[in-house]
Amino acid sequence: MKISKLILNYQKYNDAKLDQKAQAIIAALTGNANFVTTSPTLAAFTGIAANFSNALTAAASRDRVAVSLKSDAREALLNSFRLLAMSIEASAEGNRSKLVSSGFDLAIESDSALSLSPPQEFTLADGTKPGEIKFSIKAVENAKSYIFEYTEEPLTLESSWISKGSSTREYTFTNLPSGKRIYGRVVAIGTRGQEGTTNVLTRMVQ
Image 1 (cartoon, rainbow, N blue to C red):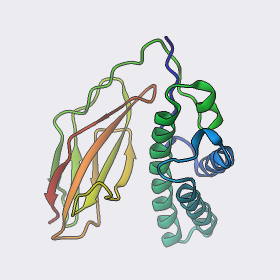
Image 2 (cartoon, helix red, strand yellow):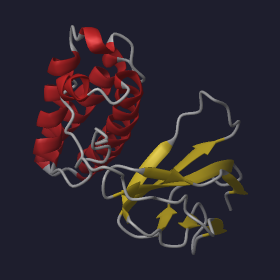
Image 3 (cartoon, rainbow, N blue to C red):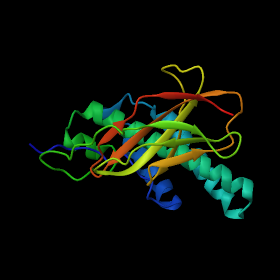
């Protein structure tokens, strides 16, 4: 039986295309009876998308601060794409028509998706400078990209995670607050939208 799933990772989209895709999803979900309740909510996603759109316009000036803020807004939007797509998949329960109505793109369908194991040998280590934490995992077979995430203490179900995407198995977060404890995890993204997530590790920022 073929399994219908959504693409979760839109990191390869350029800024303009990502902005357009966000607006298309908002239009598709507005008044969509298939997805009355989502996580994040449509209102929250719309706000994150608007923040990116505004930051994208401001970054046209090439001001360094504006460009940095645009990059932060882009990462927040990409993370919201992934969370919203996962929520929609759960609600649709594999119904292809419902998934198509969401505005998200369908992943390649197959009789059985390639297996994707959770990343192994996950470590957190001090970087070369204060305020840096290096995330590292063993490369995952069938993974096409990775999402590195951290949140500050206290760790709760409502914690807000900062996410950075990468095609490599290592990533170093910089400018973290020294003396604060962070919690980290890594998500491997498969070629057909599968995900595998590490356990959460913790480390004090130097």
